[in-house]
Structures are given as structure tokens and as C-alpha cells.
Amino acid sequence: MSKFERAVAARGPRTRRAVVARLAAALAAVTAAAAVGAALPGLQASAATGTVTGYAAANGGTTGGAGGQTVRATTGTAIHQALCNRASSSTPITIQVEGTINHGNTAKVSGGSCNTAAGVIELKQISNVTIVGVGGGAVFDQLGIHIREASNIIIQNVTVRNVKKSGSPTSNGGDAIGMESDVRNVWVDHVTLEASGGESEGFDGLFDMKDNVQYVTLSYSTLRNSGRGGLIGSSESDRSNGYVTFHHNLYENIDSRTPLLRGGIAHIYNNHYVSLHESGINSRAGGRAKVENNYFEDSKDVLGTFYTSEAGYWQVAGNIFDNVTWSSPGSENNPAGPNVQSNTSVSVPYSYGLDPASCVPDVVRRTAGANKGLQVSNGSCTPQSPTASPTSSPTSSPTSNPTTTPTTSPGGTNLSIGAGSDGSSKASGTSYGNVRDGDLSTYWSPSGSTGDISIKWGSATTVSRVVIREAAGSSGAIGSWQLLNAGTGAVLKSGSGAGTITFTATSLTKITFRITGASGTPKVAEFETYAS
Image (cartoon, rainbow, N blue to C red; front, side, top):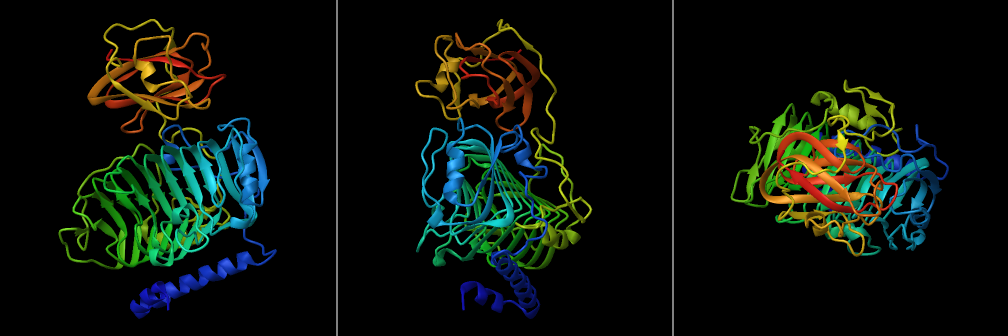
């Protein structure tokens, strides 16, 4: 008897019947889908469908490969080839996947627009990509999806199963989907992520984020049969991750980490949690979670700070706790229940609709996971087909078109002089510091045609005007852009072309100029900031 079978057996008769019925139905669905030629209901045969909600809709939006070429792939090698055949690492592309992707058909492919590896689907140092399952379904069997130093990625309607970190074969450190190292704007939707045990059986997390991953949404997905659901932050010191939304997902038969949140902010709503054996949402090390209208069932310690003395925080509303047990508080154990109360307040910068928690089990059962026809809730507990393509702008709209003027200097002191700077991957021979040195002969360029450059201060600084100066010979290369409060993700202004940008005076510690479109190689000679 496996660890998970023992856990189910140890529960009461009501739990055993419910969990066994759910697992039997899930296994029957997997078996049916694996049959040669088996038809699956309502599968999409087009590019990614629907509208992203949550933090992936902020920070400029997540559009994936929208507007680019669409290609079909039936092997992992073909996925890598599609990435490597693009004109650049940021050229938009939608890759429709059908069939089983495994170690036997996934090889490394080389090219100027990709950085791939064998034995894993590698989305590294790239942007503007959609991977969507079509036709008879897409199964990544014992093969993980690794997202690293990447942005604007959509993964939709696929199954990733039994990815191992020990034993054979291994892939992606044992994570079904893993994100790390400067990742921005990822939407994972209608996927099924599953293992066949915990760490002792060779598996790790189903959905992991670490080392500066931000603006992510996981929606309408199923995560099951694993020791670990997923984490945000790999250690108590890895607090650079956050702005993650989890909605309308099913977590079933999982030991812990649904998710584990270290630092950062997570918005968790309308999820169904069933048979969490040890702990659930573990907010710790300063993490803050907004937890609303979820349904927790037949589980233990579904919310709190666990296995550490470094506290985390939560805001709760509208949740249902059905047959949930709670452990006693201790030096490294602070369960939120049984009298669950908020101990912080979390505001989110986007609009969203909440289903009543009472209907969450039913609507999630009918919509979450791969091969469900990409059905979504209408906000009133009724599944419906998606009605729109992914949005290119945040749900919460920023101030409309800014006034862009010639680069005559405003009055006052350039606050960038003496400040710090960083950004996304830079082109060879350029430096982040070149944008704050007062020297128009030096500059920063992104490694591709788009990227981020930031000015930062050790304490809050009020800024209301920015001047972006292009290097000699590159005038007009900068196309569309956004100006962001990097601390909150709020869009201060958006527009096109270099010049002077004015906006409402804002107190912040870091401001980011994000280039989202260009007609050539952008070269930012100076990123000047002013109080007025």
C-alpha cells in the first residue's frame, strides 16, 4: 500500500468514499484519454483561448504568442525546434501540441533564438510564447516544463505527470512546472499536474516559483497525488517572488504546500482543496495571502504558518471549512484555525468575479484541468465556453496615453544620479549603470528587442517625471513602453517613443521603464527621474 493509499485509508468512511470516488474518476479519465484515438470532450484546435485574470493580467498583461506564427508539434524536439526557428528570442509564437511528449522524443536544439536542453521542455531566455494542447490532448510524461529568465508565457490545456528528481528518468528537478530566475508574466491555465507520491518516491513540487518570479496566474487547473503542491520562494531568504493568483483550481490528495508562500503576495480564491494531509496554504517569512471563497474539505491545517518561526499573514473572507482539523499552536506552528481570522489586509490591483464558496466544488469539478473544453465559470457557478482571446492589457487599466514631449530637461535635480539600477538581461557590452551616469555616450540595451531597466533607491522617493534619452544613432528605436512602480506592479503610464513622461507624483523605492516594442535595438543612454 502506498503512502497516499495509507493516508486515505486512515481517514473516516466519509472521506474514504469521497476521495476514492474522485481518484477513481480521475484515473478513469486518464485511462480513457490515453487510449489510441479516444475522443476528448470539447478540445480546442486553435491558439490559447480565454481571458487571463489575476496578476498575470497586470504588469502589461500576458498574451503569449498572440499575433505570431502558429505551429504544430508532436514531440519535445519539435517544440524546441519551433522556438529555435524564430527570428529572435522574442518573436511571438503559438505551439500547438498533440500526443505524448517524453524523454525519448525530447532533444536539445540549438539556435540564436533559443537555449534548450534534452530531457526537459526548456523555455529559457525567451519571451512571447504559447504552448497549448490540441486535438487528442497533450501529455508531458515524466518530463517537466522549465521556465527561466523568460517573460510573457502561456501554458494551456496540457497534462504534466510523474516528473521525478530521483530515480529514472529525472527531469526539471522533479517539478511538473518550475519557474526561476527573473521570470515575469506567466499564465498557466486548464492544466493537469500530477505525481504518484511524494519526495520519498522521487517527486518534488507540481508548481514551483523561485529566485525573482512575479506576475503569475494559475487558473482552472488540477494538482493531485503529490507530496508537494508548490512553492513561492525556495528558502526563507528567497523573498523576491510574488504577485501570484490562484483561482478555480483543484488541489487533491496532497501532503502540503498549496502553496508554500515565502514573502511576496498571493491571491487565492475559488479553489477546492480536498484531502490535504499535513498542511495547506503555508504563508510564512513575511508572505501575505488573500484567501477568499475557497472550499476546504476533509483536510488538516489548511491555512497558517507551519514549520518555521518566521510568521506569515493572511486575509480571509467567505471560505468554507468542511471537516477540517487543526493542530495546536507551537513555536514553529501557527494554524489559522479553528477560529479563522484575518491578521493582515491585502489589496489587489485588478478586478475579478467571485463564485460563492458553496458552489466551488461543483464548478471546479466541471472546469478545472486539461481536456475540459477550456470551460470557465461565469461568476455565478455556471460553466461556460471562453469568449475572448487573452488580453494584452491589465484588467485594471492604467492612466491612458501619456504626454510625451521632446527631451528638454525639466527643472530640479536628476534623482537617478547616485541611485542604483538593475533590469532584465542586458546586451553584451552594456551596463545598467550607464543609464544613471549623466553620460550620453554610454547606454544600456536589452538582450533582445524588449526588456526592463530600473532606477532604485534605499528609501521611498517621490517621482512625478521621467526623461528617457536614447543614445546617438538609435533615435526612434524605442516603440511601446510602460512605466511601472516596481514595488506594487502598478502601471504609472504607458505610451510609445522616448522623451519626457509626466504622471501623478508617486512615492516609491524602484521605478521601471519596460520596453514592450521596438523598431530596432533600443539604447537607453539616460533614465532620468525628477520630483517635479
